[in-house]
Image (tube, rainbow, N blue to C red; front, side, top):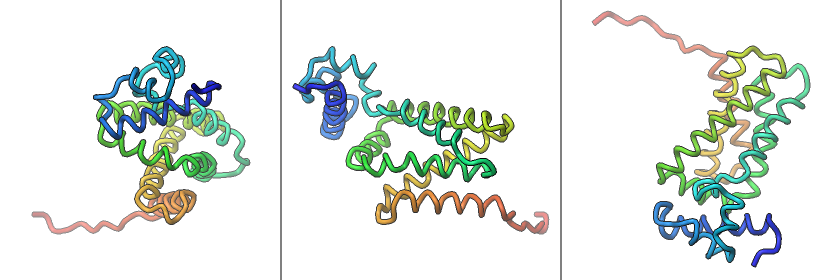
Length: 196
């Protein structure tokens, strides 16, 4: 029996991950997760409102950390530099938790209910980043666009790191933001072709 709330939460997350991999998300119940973790079902619901949320623990902490990083970034940085700095700080946690994160992403990828929840969480995090940029004085429209574009670059980097973990996530992040800057710095030349 886990002695602390943090330990019970960690065991519930690990048990859910194991059962979702073995049986699939839809075939697993909260009661089975609790039993695998060595706690009762009431303890499960004390930590998580439903069986989807067990894979999304830490989102509130990530939101707070991203907003704080954006708020504390040095003056004079461009919005993408601020976002890269914030994402690099949060990425350290992903690298540390890769043994949990990687199988989690794979489960989410094949489970529509979890993909839907992940999209909602990403929208929530993007809105928080946009708000943090607005609080730094960036206009409403630009803050939203920067946050959405920056989040897309972050997700691109995370996927590249899952596919190729040899370079660090930090390396993938820097590369994604360098590519983003290159895309915005050069406009492709388009020549009008003959009308057909």
